[in-house]
Length: 275
Image (cartoon, rainbow, N blue to C red; front, side):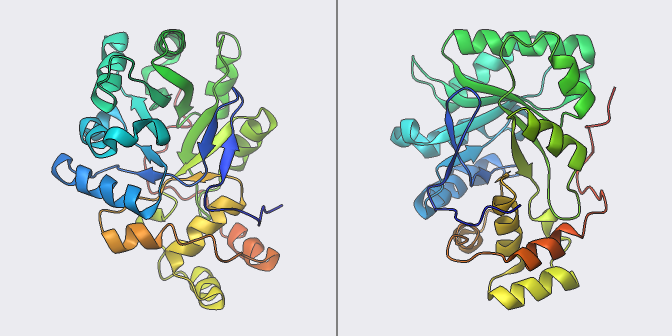
C-alpha cells in the first residue's frame, strides 16, 4: 500500500512522540572541507533533516553549517565505538551542538558489529544520554531482526528508528515487516543505489512516464513506501533536484513495477546478518 499524499514538510511521528522530517539529507563520504558548503546548500534547498555519524568525520562541520538554525533542524549522528562509549557519545554531541545545552535529535548505534554484550552496553549508554537531555531520540542502524529481538530483553527505551539499506533492489522485507509491526521507523540509506541502477530499464521507463529523473523516482518510491530516505550529494544542482519530489506521484502500477525489482542486492556491507 503506497502513501501518495506527501507534503514537502512531511514528518513522521516516532514512537516516543518526537517528529522526524520524512526526507533527510546524508553526508556520508562528504569530506570535512566540503561538508559545510554541502550542508549549507541543503539547508538553502529546504532540507530540515541532516544525517551524520562519528565515522563520517564531519559532525563538527555539520554543526557549523547549521549554526543558529540548530533548533529548527533535525540532526542525527551515530555511535561507531565499542570502547569508551560515553566519551564518544558526548564528543559527538559537542561537535554537532557545542552549546552548553547542546543535543542531537537522534542518536543511533551505527552497526551491530560490536556483538551482543557490547550492543547492550551501547544501548544503556544511549538511554543515559536521553536522561541527560543530550539526545531526544535513540535508535539503531543496520540491525537485523535477531538484533532487534535481543533488544526486547534489555531495552528500557524502545528504539524509535532502524536505519538500513533500502531501495527497490534491496527491500529487506523481514526487517521492514518487523519494524513496521512495532512502530519502529525505517530510514533508507543509499536510496539512490549509489547511482548503479541509473540505466535500469524499469526505472528508466517510470522516469520517462513521470517526466522526472531516475533519482527523483527512487526518492519518491521510498517516500511512498513510508520510509525516510537519506539521499546525499555534494553537487548543489542535485541537492536541489533530490528535494523536488513533492509535485508528482507514482501510480500503483509504477510502485508495483519497482517493488518487483527486489533481488536482496546490497551496495553497502550487509551488517544485518551479523551475530
